[in-house]
Length: 527
Image (tube, rainbow, N blue to C red; front, top):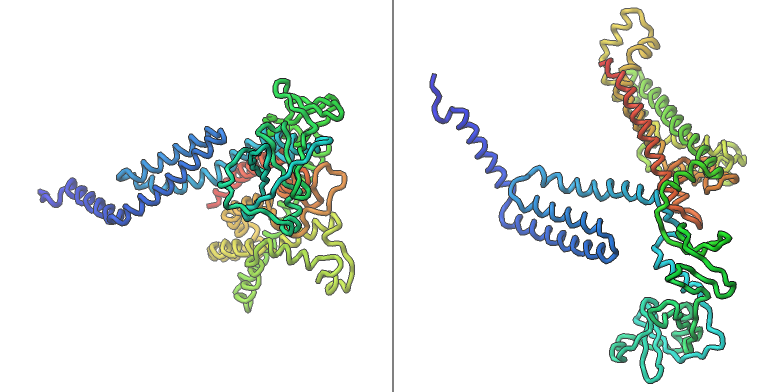
């Protein structure tokens, strides 16, 4: 049989190609869509140019190159005809790089530095800060008549000296200026000086761009006196000398000027310390003991949280799945109500209910007792597990309900015909089939509870505190809440050590996840 022209395969393919091309043209829109695309890319390019220049000013060449390359790729993809899959993949990829890859990479970078309180800038900023923070009034110095100016918010200093007008503020050193340029500033009168006395006394204006030249300060807004630092910075020798004691502080490579007896001048600066943070975490006795106790409790908390929520959820799913039970829908709705509450809100509510002095549990359920639910180490751990059970069992209940309903009833009926009882049917047939679908969720639930920050911090804030610990940690702290405290709580914040802890947590969870998922492959044979 002969094929007509319209029936030939090549002809059909050509027709399909033409149809697909027509759909693409229609989806691409008209001139309006093109103009909108150009406008959005213009905004993106302008933002990228600004970011590149900002990075170059801060000597972040690598960041500038990455931003430039990404911007170039985005422009090529969206201006070139075709490449439709890339147009959809680019936004997600960019957000993945910014919010995942960059964050993980930056955390890894910080873990190898001493970044933290007193070490959060570079060396030049540390030198400037030391010279400014140790300034004292020059003995027997002559005061200079000054005028305090305001631009509506910030204050500045006006000095008339040798027929020359000098002006400066907290960011600009004193320098000659044309009075006409100060037309937008207002002079503070006596009443204004009194109302803003704290700002006036804290105003510090550098005499010149040389930090060793000192600064001018005033207490009354009328007369200013020169202040110079008690430290002398020797750039060639790379030392700081205290003129009052004669102590010489040198850069010994630890990120701070250090004296011969080990005393350091703060603030210091951020440097690369290699694996020192990891070494401290594993070898420092005070930190190691805290890390060990917190790690053990983290594993216990995660395991018991998964076990209790799973078994309670499974029990309720079995009970409410029985067709003979009346009001099953009402009970199911009531059972999932805790799941509707945000975890942080549930933690705060339970923290109030478990309060020792006026909590609902002590006052009503235990007739005014003073049970320290949140201040005793063991009771606090029990309270955390109880609250997490209340918050977590509805999820397991829903999962187990769906898994049980997906098991064919024919299997149970066949087991009954073979003489198996209800418990044997559940243990030998339903539970293995249930674990096939539930096991991956149990693993993910373990990983979630391993980093369950909300319940711990909202309920007990990690307390009660471990007095013998070298870190700011408590009896109910898990690894993630310990990392938070090391990084953000207290006077001394060690971001480098906290980042090292974060990497350790990541490795632990990754190893557990890999091993667990390999073990769950054995359940796939049941299918």
